[in-house]
Length: 278
Image 1 (cartoon, rainbow, N blue to C red):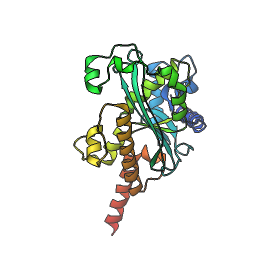
Image 2 (cartoon, helix red, strand yellow):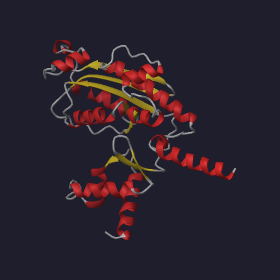
Image 3 (cartoon, rainbow, N blue to C red):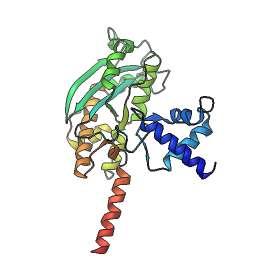
Image 4 (cartoon, rainbow, N blue to C red):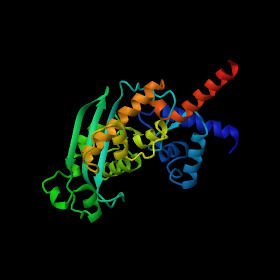
């Protein structure tokens, strides 16, 4: 693949992503560039990731999807953006095998909670003893709780168009997407933001970035860890602290949150250059 081919592929990927409402995963970009027959080939996805990651116009979100600088999505002002902050409790960590047993979701806008959803979720899968000890949830507690199918449309509506936030998004968002997909509900149109990653970027000197420790550090109420509503509330508190830190650094839009380290490095270089000329 010569440099002209690379330029053409990157240009095609850029134009494609610029027209998308939300970031897309690597296989979706690969499908657009290389066609339906080749997009799932591991080597094709490796090529796409290498193409996009080497070009500063492309931005990888915290849930490993792709968008581009200049997209309306990334230009959302943080002060006006709307966030769906989510936490799940499940029977385990294996997607497609384990099931959701509790959901907490808060919609945060302009620094305050404007909508709230919390519910136990019915599952006939036996809750393992270690999960019961961790969460305090047992199978008998789920009697009378709604099924995921019963709440799925409401959840998708609360998530759609909002920025999806979780503390370790690698767990919560894929789990939800799987549950929506197996019921024939299209993936909610969200961009993923992870408070765990934000905490590493904004507060690198903290000895721990677990949710209970962050809640204690910031003086957030977190009386029942490992329950979905309490964890979602604490995560929302960490998000607001991150937004405050971003504002203090002059970061103003969603795209800035995906490029914190890059922007801070550029600022340090500029400050160093000014100091050397002083």
